[in-house]
Image (tube, rainbow, N blue to C red; front, side, top):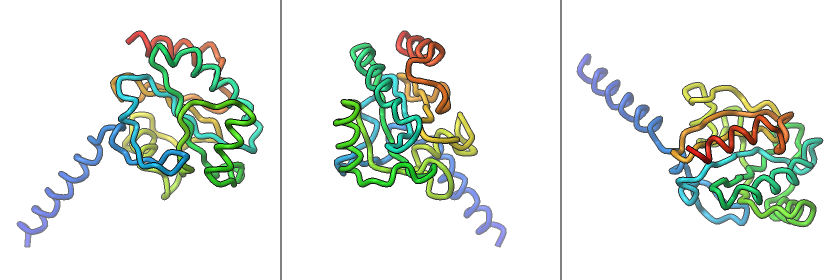
Length: 181
């Protein structure tokens, strides 16, 4: 019986270790158009992940995120929008409604993904890998427009809350440093 328990423990430990070693680029995602993808297409770039919402006091940050993306995309920055309805139900629309809103109201051209959960038991595995208990930047997302910066090497660098505007000097300094590295 001890051998069986030990074998099960070793197998479980191996699986857990393997799962935690999974690259952020490997987590399955869906684009806002419903196409299967991953972040692998952004390998070697600095990624700014943002949980977004269309009916939030911070929704105007879409404009600043688009400006940030336009200014730095040729230097290797990609902004990735992840709609989330977990905070005050402020992203109730369908993916097509979200896409239409973002493009018509704010001219968004950066990649947008399908709606996900960023906290709780339904948290998307990508976010779990970064902010889960075993992630490098643990702790729940506090509200819409939380930002996570990932370096060119696919390793999370820092987190910024909703109050950090896309034009924030602090955010821009960290992005520029990541782009240099």
